[in-house]
Length: 360
Image 1: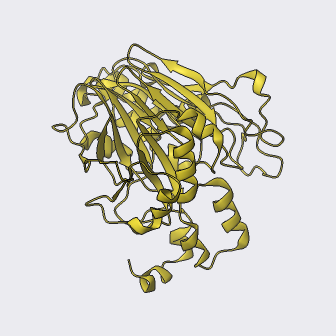
Image 2 (image 1 turned 45 degrees about the vertical axis):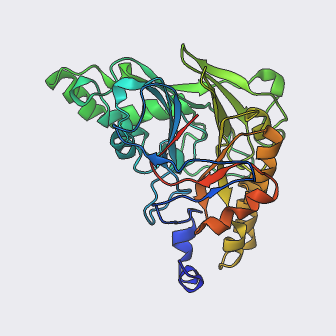
């Protein structure tokens, strides 16, 4: 996209804070001794049944429909089983096209309750329901933020104002009660509420975390899930005014994949990402937004709740991450827009596009 074309993009289009780039060949940046292979397209044929892998199902930031990028969503695949992270626009189709059938889903995770991270939960459940569609056949948890009061300066317009992951999933199932009741009897499917449940992440009480007075204490990651293949840890990150907002770490015998979630630059992300084989980090290109007709309040929001390329580089170096994958892109239109990573990080990094397969 040329500079002239960029200036014509409307404020409405940009409010989702996402960027567009060609979904063909990704940019790979690296220090002098680093080398990375170009990721392949994730399909049922290319995703291995062994090892640990990342699939970038969708890479766009924000609740907007633009360009070829789908909404933010990722998958971690371990020895043929998979785990989902976030449910952005188009995620159910992206997962299916990548060969991620529901009958191989172990657990799902949500970083925070912004709409662009949860909007496809209902569609995923309804279109991955039981054996007729190779769907979920035993209970799966969708793990995410628990109930929290709204920050003091946020005024509720829709009630109830306190919503956690458990509430969200339960109310989505209630919204589709007619269809669920019909199909459970007419098609002999397992009741959908016996296959999916929302699970609230309980914050350690010792943190004394609070949406107004202590939203992001310095902390060590804590375990939120474990099975025979992975251990998943979480940490709080600053994506204010949203609280709580999480980053996640997946650790298996094969390696470590860490997700920053939506966040400003913060050492909690560096701690969570220690020695990660892949660090998946969000990005905002503030140079682009400053060149548009946005209020200072909106620019402050972007800068205080997201991370610049330079910030990614600092966090990756502090973490000792072996490779960085940049996703949830905001205002990124070309590979040059993330070149600032290399000012502070000499390892390999790439600008992700949809349905790429990265292996640990």
